[in-house]
Length: 162
Length: 365
Image (tube, rainbow over all chains, first blue to last red; front, side, top):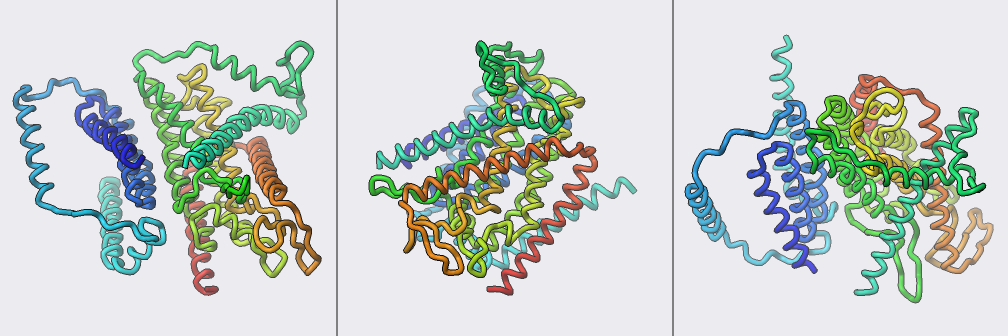
């Protein structure tokens, strides 16, 4: 059952990931990216990471992609018309080389078999305890970094108005 | 294993069946109730021979009309996304109910059945996640229609929805802090406990302020009066202006399913879910245990489960009724007022409520 679900999510996810690049319509690309996010969330759920799976949907599909769609709608982008550069052999060569590079880099890291999930693994309690005990400093530093980015964006957008 | 699978299927089927039928009935209730409130007769014409059933046949007639009407896609519209949008609007509304418990454990043929479709550790987060997907239906509908009015309607609808999502999340977090769990069945179970021996520990008693914030934000999320700017049934053109037949019907249905969802969530989080005060399904006494030592009534387990499911249904129906009353009582906000209220009033109040709750919880424990 788990293997079946894994293959379903992976195949749909990878296919839609490819369609994000190949689709000529920006709106279509964005929708395919949403489907990819949802498939990733399914994979996290299969890995016992229920909390991460839900956050994946909530933040990426529910918030980040919505903002991207807003931008696409506001700019009223049309499907791109210009032909793509490069001929078929070049594309195939690029694809093969890319695949080899990815496989070689993947082989550098030996992750081994992931440890079995303990009781609280992936639950809200488990993730929360890790974030606010073991990793509290990096967590707070990232929060400050994001806050700086937000304030910076506000200042940059306000400067023109003055 | 196989039996468990069948049980889950039956539960999911029951929930979907109840949701869709109740949504259909709500279309009738809304018309009849608005008629009563405005001193009119309301729908009374749809009939089979002499039989009108007080207008109850109108939802049926509506359904037949919508299915048989022409399905029109405007020229230049994106056909795929135009067709996908109604499904994207209805889907989140239908699956949210999966984590809402509609009863305690039912013991049937020696097998304990949890009366909840999916018992998730991240229950409340699941609700946030799925309802954050609802915005795609409105956005896609607005964009894919190739109509500037629908595009504006879609933008208005989606910005309103993402604005109020924050307040919804923050108002529920107070409940999570108090009951120290995000599992909805656990939250309901804890609401069966008693405060000072006689007051049930319902969410509305511990978090009255969060209840008001949640109800207001949920109404805005639902896009109904007084927050119905994106649709503006009476004069403004909304995001589904280019939709006809059952595709429009699906947007319409999604709105009514969302009323039931809001009512179900309010019941679960603030009104004790399936809890009936002093009624216990498990423990020493199965049945009523009255406070102040007034004794106890013993009841069979199946009857207790039935009473609890019935109590949940009645609470949800009362919630729906209140939402309809609100819809036909209040006038509409202006759009800038909606945004102002969402970002500068509701959001701050939810933050303050969360802060005070956190401090109190910290001091008490």
